[in-house]
Length: 219
Image (cartoon, rainbow, N blue to C red; front, side, top):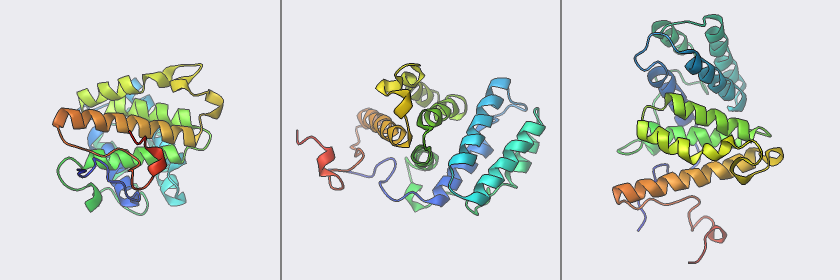
């Protein structure tokens, strides 16, 4: 039998995307430190630039661009000031108090569910910059996803992206949004399979056999 997936196979909600962005900005960036290290600052700038470019809404892009410019202007801003400028940011019309929809509510869902939706959305909207998008996501997880085991697993899974000649077996010249989306779904499925094995719960892979029979080997 099939039970609820970590990320239900539904149309991505803009509310969940906004909730994932705001949760990460409010709770995962500083993580108890007053000032970010130079490495964390660099990764954060790249992450904000990716959000600015790939979220498909002019007002959202302008709001994130304003946040990014303020971060550039005040290189050593502290946690209190950071929170203040985050609360002035709007994503798809939502403010920083927004939470995820019922799709990502419940045990085993929440932030990771919304974050996966955000990752897939960013990959799908990466144009010809699929590899750059995935590397930015990799660095974000490595620095700002607060789960040591999860970070290590994703680091291992995505290490092939660092290959200069054929990242994950894909020529760099054709590593576009489609290639990035397919690679991310494969990585997501591998992680889902590992979680299923660890928790002894059956979680479906994407796409489901009912939505794409040709995608599945009958065996």
